[in-house]
Image (tube, rainbow, N blue to C red; front, side, top):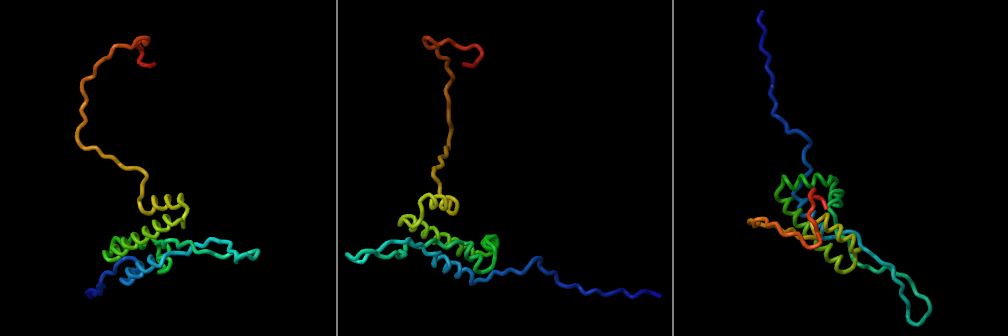
Amino acid sequence: MARKPSVRTVLPKRPEGRPTKYKLVYCQQLIAFMKAGGAKVYKPMSVSHGLAAGGEIVDHLLGQLPAFFEGFAAKIRVSVDTLHEWRKVHEEFSESYKRAKEIQLQQMVAGGLSGVYQQSSLIFAMKNMHGWRDQTDVQHSGEIRCGPLVELPAAEGFAPHDNGHP
């Protein structure tokens, strides 16, 4: 008795991994999140009321911290690595990310110039987050030519060394 050939249904191939959590609306939300900024910075100040003795201590608003990408990632419940991946895959998110980075830079510079942040902390953050540097790279293009080496006579009081060490 001959066997009847079995028929298998071929299913379409599924993409590997989880489906993306990316939404186009995240582009606008990222910009809005960065514009809103981070926590407010207060400094306690003593306030007196005229000639009366005493006074009270009030919180004086110095400024606001910048918003950070880690905060946005936590808000939409993804990792910062996911944001970086979206930058590579979605051109519109990459543009929004660049704009958000510019907003963050403006907030940090404004806070630094107004004295909201400790200068050493700000310098450290700017170097790590925005690529600021203390030095200027100098690049040379072209040729460096050296003339022939000339042996100079020994100066008076100095004897030449025969072993090459002083």
